Amino acid sequence: MPRKCTVCGHPKRREIDRLLIQGGTIRGIAKQFRLNSNAVHRHKQGHLPVKLKEGAKMEEDKQSGNLWGELTGLRARAYAIRHYEATMPELFEAE
Ligand SMILES: [Zn+2]
Image (cartoon, rainbow, N blue to C red; front, top):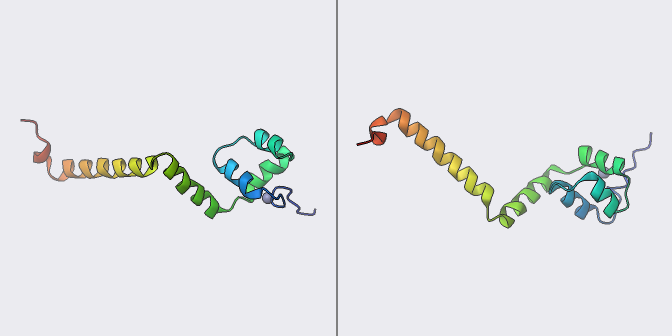
């Protein structure tokens, strides 16, 4: 079987990838770019570059006011607090 991906060969592939990564629906993207939804689905499953996914993630962070970074920070603090609770309970004793 020839492996020809209409999405990979699409002039707006970057935009399509971006939309896919940002959670656009296969059907919607296929319609928007006049692609076959099966092709978009297959492309999403097998052809999306990981680095682009990461890049989109970072961009998303910027757009959302670095919410992910904030969450990661909060989680780290939660872990730290739990750690201190376990190792230095006196710090957390209520008066
Ligand atoms: Zn592809």
